[in-house]
Length: 123
Image 1 (cartoon, rainbow, N blue to C red):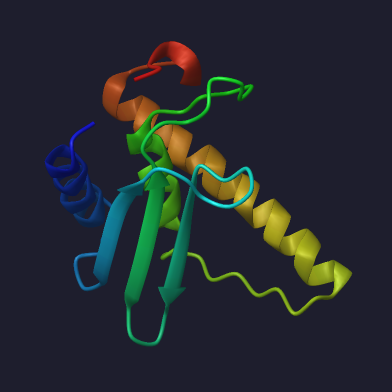
Image 2 (cartoon, one colour):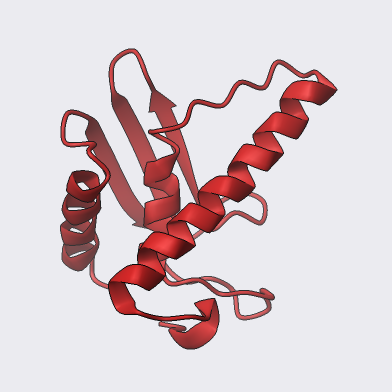
């Protein structure tokens, strides 16, 4: 995917998710620490976020999601604040919320393209 196409998708999904009032920078990157496909560093007070999405996921991954679906997931982090204070309860909540965001991102992406399985598009 080109950087220009990625920026078009960012604009589209910011609007769809009612994030037009946010200042969000997003970029495609070659690597991200850990097993992440993307990450989002957001500030809810200033309504700003910096998003990074892997340009190409390693083929050894069990599930390979399209870049657009990963972008949607990261944008959803701007809608749902997570609080991890180190307690078991907050870590549990954060994991459950993260799974909800993953399900929501997939549902939005698949509704747009009318696809049922995440591995249908391995671009």
